[in-house]
Image (cartoon, rainbow, N blue to C red; front, top):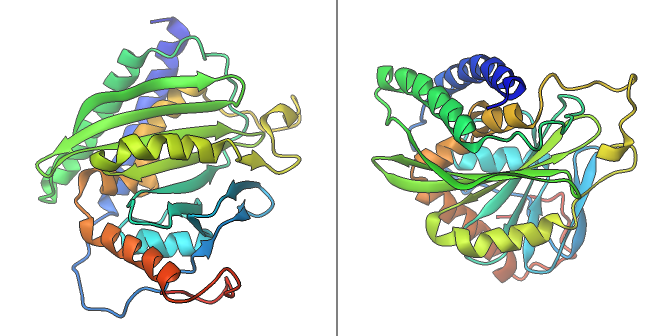
Length: 295
């Protein structure tokens, strides 16, 4: 491994492990209670869906539904995932597919892609496992299930044309295995993270659909990666390799999606699917007021 890559990984391990432990401490499970059905403000496609306040947008076609930032936070609560405040949008299928994609933006500055040829998948996996084991110490203290990183489902890959960094990682607990797939779209002031939350049976069908969705993602004028102004705009303190380690460790927990990866939340996903179904089978149309909560 090249010295530059090794130094970046050392720096990221220290900060990533600390963030992992701190965030896991705040993620205690909530006892289930009998409550009124959650009303989520799903908006149907086709539409141009805004992501953030004049930050980005994406085209969604018929057969998809969209949640804005507030609706996404409600969804995180519904699926017992901690809210980080970076959540901006969610896209889901309008059928019983069960998967969804959560969009979050980290304003960390412009991430230079100088290390795009130095992405050492083996070294990155070691760093991720170290961070996971540190988090497991806290989980043992609390009597929670520990986690094991099985390995890459798809090693980190950077696309210079789209400035997208993507990977998939497999994890295991006593509850079984699952996969999270992450795509980070680099921008002028930070990175947009699109995390596919899917069960193993949904993954094969979901990945090409999500990839197709992301072809229509775009930053609004002034926010694109190519619009970075050297010497004026903030430069991120780390590169692509550290983004992967943080993304698969601290950032994954921060987004609340590690709870989805390691905990069975079939009830939450069933509620998600049921909510989407009700939207399309209750006689409401695309003319429904998107500001009005929908059950």
